[in-house]
Image (cartoon, rainbow, N blue to C red; front, top):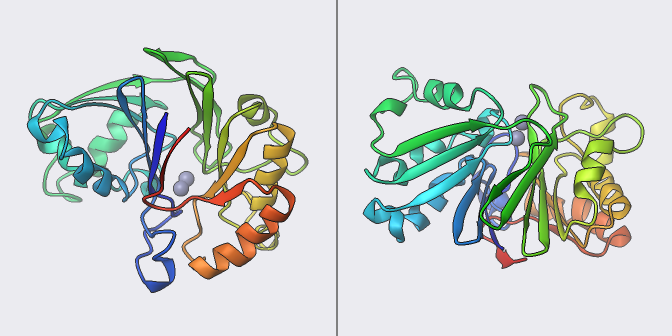
Length: 271
Ligand SMILES: [Zn+2]
Ligand SMILES: [Zn+2]
């Protein structure tokens, strides 16, 4: 499968000199497998993915893609109204995710918030609610999930294709003691774990418990316990400049789990 990051920032877009290396757009990931275009979350990075897709069949109104929504916090859907393929007649989208996906996207484009309402977009949209643990096969691409520990809940997805697997675990918080057993089970043996490292362990201890985010330390513990091959830390905090990410998030994690990397906007690779 081919994976590319279009947004790796948490909570709020953060343009500027201090975030230019890892990027300032919020969560959006493109996945290509089995000849399919998959989009995981539609944060502000979705705008850039839309421009790339316009160069392909989506520009001619012949594109098809499946969205997998982890949850509906603003930073994960704010790019949707700016996704140009939405406005091209003939493009077709299937949305998978927790219940209320349609309602949330329609509400985001209420006229008072955005000048073009959801119903005025000329592309086609279909919705299917997924339950935690529900297995889904899109041709040879298999998808399953577990419940996300995050305010208002959500789904952590695992994508498997041709024997390779990737777990997308952003916006997750670990329990007070140990690891989330459901997430550990889902992550077991994954080739790639993409994990929420919004806070340093010190920041987490200082008043950020219960906010639904995690640390590099817990990501590394999970990666080791589940014997994953590679760990990508993501959902970078809006206060964390590039230099801080490298010094205070990547460096300590790499010492213990050498195959740790920082997710970076624009980075594409084959798994
Ligand atoms: Zn988020
Ligand atoms: Zn969230």
